[in-house]
Length: 153
Image 1 (spheres, rainbow, N blue to C red):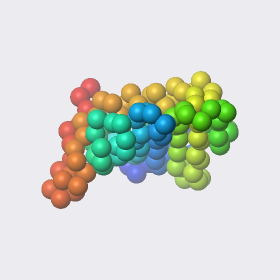
Image 2 (image 1 turned 45 degrees about the vertical axis):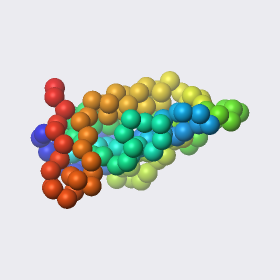
Image 3 (image 1 turned 135 degrees about the vertical axis):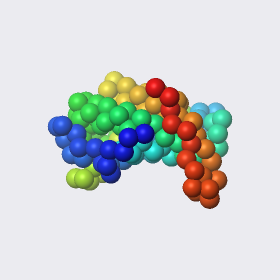
């Protein structure tokens, strides 16, 4: 993987340093997990409930994918999204996207698929990217100093 520095400067907006995506559970078997993406191509996954992989795992992805996500975040006007989108339904999973930039942190929460289509697309892009990662156990990787294999092009 080619290192691109500590953060990626978007051509339009502020420098994005971290993207965090979380799916929250429901009263049933909705998967609950959190992924954290960084510009150097590191992803940290924390499986919480109703997922194949429970616990904390790390892997890598192409840093260029972070550049693309950052560009998309700017393009859709993420910084202008409402802080929360909600419906009056009690048993719906939620999605939370947190974008950390050099200007601050913005958190957008959605309950029950109530956000704009651009938010839906961003969540699905993150899901797609992280689904292709080969994860290793975070504790074992820290102890050995090894990282998981990079995603193949």
